[in-house]
Length: 529
Ligand code: GDP
Image (cartoon, rainbow, N blue to C red):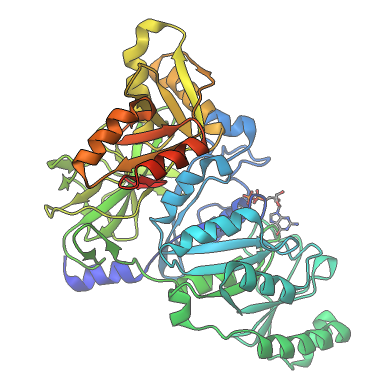
């Protein structure tokens, strides 16, 4: 493989995820995006709404039962000469850790905002996470087919609350029943909206030039005049698109449309493929690694079980950072210091799994995992480094877990440790007793764990209340002081699934007292895998 070939593959790749508040339209946009990627002939199959084709990401019964999307799936599709990887993230807040980790594996994000509602809570939180790496953000203002708020006001809200400058690329003409389409500021053309085209790629009806009288004929003189006035204001008052500021995460191009009406998603995709970064370098424990390096490297950001009920397996998702994956290649599993030959990695084209022959930086491949791969693991072609920044968050909810059949203690422990390696839940083993404490960030995680322990490990477990309010990972440079801390606080200390020492506090007051009492000990709320 020559440098030029590798560069060509890198140049065409874009890897992104969608961040939004539940109900803003993430799923609907995903469907339309896939429609453009020619993967679904007719959109409407991601959640299987009224369709007989089963939703690909709904592999878990719970998802169907509760109508929530728990898992992260990956979709790759071509779009106008680019190859786009879209990483789906769980919509439910209880699985936000998964979302955070997924955001470490993308190079840009699409922020979807319900234009009737403006900036909502979860969007705010997710934007904070993207800030950690200054991820470039593209914005889609959705649901223009409904009555929305004044678009200028919504842009102001984004700028004020999310601290990111907005550069409108398109501007809406009316909304709700009067939604007529958008004016594309960069292309100087009006693109007309037609209703009833939600599930097919629309025939594009455009009128070139803002002062073209055809616009008046198409949307009426009043609306046309109003649009021209508004645009004069908007163009004067808003930011111009600036590639550098966009790449620095300081400015977002904004598109308007309706995902349900399948309008505007293509404008957004055009912007995304034109402006979003090609696969970015990633920091490691030793140095920064660039996509166009000859040697292969990648990291695991997600482990998912039972992707396909027929297979009952666990798949580790790897983001390729550099070099090329080829079927049958040997890679080094850095944490284990072991070479492994990988001949059956998977790709996820529109949610379907298939064997991959080759893959490049920006791509996500799935490795079959028989318990040796953990979240955060690095794979290289021999070099000894570890990718940085894949977080674990201190859980806020705790339960003691107990077996119905006490003879299966070993199975239970094995199951819990494996599930914690997947990031499904966290497990703590107190130093002073034989309890098993499960910690979660969101309450639904507890249900998932019990269900999976039963179906995958054949153990029936139940929860009991436990007197733990919060947990912190602890470390200390001074061995002597640490030893004293360990001795005096042993009743509050536990080992997590990866044998890291953790302080489990019955109350926040207790935590604060211990922090004051042992100033040399570092208590951390997030831990890198
Ligand atoms: P998610 O929770 O962000 O994945 O949101 P969904 O894509 O499931 O959408 C939530 C609801 O909003 C669904 O009932 C969609 O049909 C609806 N919806 C999504 N996009 C639009 C839109 O552009 N216009 C209207 N009117 N409804 C929409």
